[in-house]
Image (cartoon, rainbow, N blue to C red; front, side, top):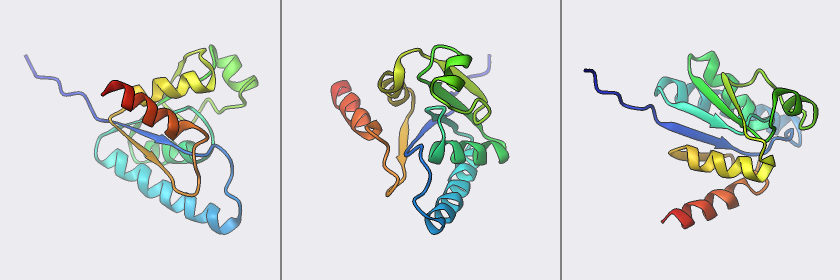
Length: 139
């Protein structure tokens, strides 16, 4: 029987908002493209909050380069994901609908991946604080 080795899961968290100006938008797009490509080339699975902004751009880049992505949604259904939270349904390969809201979704995200990447100057609202707290509780 062939031994199975799970792929590493890399979490990308960060602002779901738009960059404050065109220069930052270009920097974000370039960085996101390179990061998505690197994740895909290393055969890792990308885990995001199934959101917009930085995580969405990285996810789309990873998928363009043959990678896989999972989005953990705060919503309990596709309809709620799109209507209540106004989140995209086409930015990841698989969406897991948690029904736990934004903070609950973040806890699941943090517990699901091996490493987390957050973009400096585009801080995740509370995401990194959740990551640190959950990891401290696990130790």
